[in-house]
Length: 260
Image 1 (cartoon, rainbow, N blue to C red):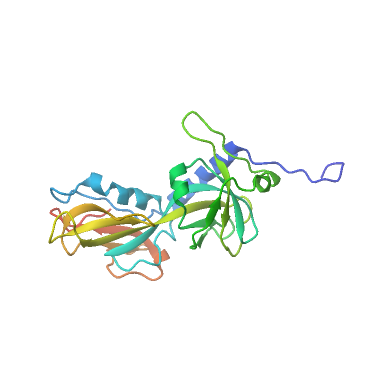
Image 2 (tube, rainbow, N blue to C red; image 1 turned 90 degrees about the horizontal axis):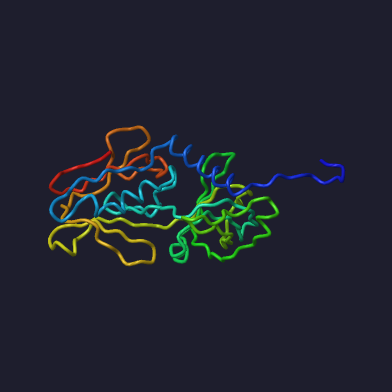
């Protein structure tokens, strides 16, 4: 406390913000290897490149909440894929103000399926599954008050921004908590449109048209689940879903089962 009776507070610079997020990501990746899969060639109509979206989505997942409870089976599963990250400046349980790192503006405009924030005390992420309304610019004064700034623009990226997320959240995240926005992405093994009589792998992002990624596949194509440290992969959907630590993607094409 200084001589005037006011408590001094040191702020968080944009560089410190970026470093903190990187450290959090490294720690998370070191503790748990998220739902992983390696896709082999599946025949003349499918290759690694066609299923790269699946690999990319899987590698982005947070450890305990990456699978959505809407998951039905290995033939139909839904992922919560993060696409924007930032620090919480403050929340009253209804409006959460967030200082975002630079993110693709078109993806932000599409909206979020939900968001999740990290509790530094418990070490886990709390998921808010209701789609928030995102207003930009957000309440910049909320970030200024707690010493959280925004990341400036660089030659290779746009500046960060302050946004408000309007959605009920309990408990409310505390200032300085890491938060990410996510989109629900559904994967299905079902009848192929490009190869009649065979199955294909389909991808659907919330609110968008479905896309066939790979074909032809047989009716045994599916995902199996690695539960904690148990092997082999299990075909029965585990309970709770947070116990899943890996995916084995069984495409059932000409090269058989693949996994990693």
